[in-house]
Image 1 (cartoon, rainbow, N blue to C red):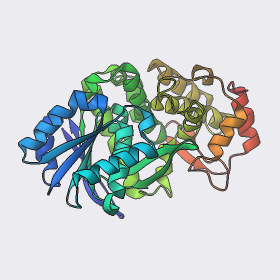
Image 2 (image 1 turned 30 degrees about the horizontal axis):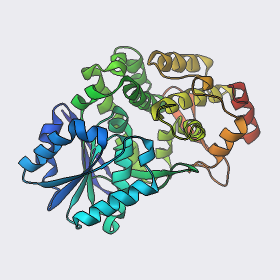
Image 3 (image 1 turned 120 degrees about the horizontal axis):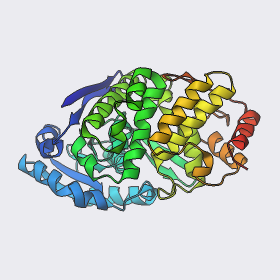
Length: 367
C-alpha cells in the first residue's frame, strides 16, 4: 500500500492511497472527514458491484450513508444529471459538514465532484475511483466538469478532493476495453515526462494492460506520483499542467464528432489515438525522431489501442479542426497542442498553423 501526497499553494493537501482491499477500509479512512453524513454518488452498474461493500464499511465506522445513482456512461455528465444529483442532495438535506463520496469511474467522479463544488458553494468530497482511467487520471487534481453538445468538459470547476482511495482489487471487474482505456492514460504519463517508466510499460510492465495486479499497482502509483507533482506546481493549468493533455486535443475532437458515444470509442482509446497523432505531427514538424513515433505506435497497438484515425471512424478534417479550435485549451480560436521532442519530453505549443494541421489530418485519413 502506498500513500502519495498531493499538495500545492492553492489548496489543502490530501492523500491518494493506492493498494488492495481499500474498499473494506474505506469507512475508517473517510470517517475523519465525515463530521455528519455521507452521500455516495455512483452509477447504477458500479453501485450494484461495489456500493454494498462501501456502504457497509462506512456504516461500520459510524458514518450515516445514503446513495444516489445515475445511469452509466458519458451521457450522465450533463446539465440534466447534475441538476438531478444536486436536487437529491438538497432533498436529503446535506449541510456543509457533510461529505459526498464519488464511487465510480471518471464520469461519476467529474459529476459528483462538480455537484460537491456547487452545493452550498462547496462541500467536501472523497474519490473512490473504480476504473483504471479514474485511478491514474481524473480522480487526482481537482478537475470536475460536465459535457455540453459543443464539447467535452467545458462547464466545470476546480474542486480538490479530501482523499482518494484507489483500490486495485476493484479493477478485476472491469471489461477489457475499460482496462485498455485506462492503460492509455498510464502510457501518456510516461510519454510526457518519464521515458524510463514508458520503457517499463513497454516491457516488464506490459501485463498491466491485461489485468496483472502487481503491474497495475506499480503503474497506478507511478502515474499518480507524476500527476501529483505536476498538479502541485500548477493547479489551474496555467503552465506545466497542460502537459497532461497530451493526446487530448486530438482525442476530444474525435470523441465530439462521435457524439461522445463510449460504445463507438472509449475516452482512453481516443487519448491513445491522440498521442499517436501528436507524435506523428511532432515528427512532421521535425521535433522528434521517426524512431520515437514507431515505438509509440508499436507499444500503443500492442495494448490493443487504436493508432489510426480510420479505426475510430470517418471524419472531415475541417470538422476536427473546428472542434480543436473550440477546445478549452485553445486561445483566441487558435489550436493549442501538446507536442513532443522525444519520448518523455513533451511541451505545449500555442502557435499551431491551422492550414498545416488541416493538411496533416487529411494525411491521416480525414476527408
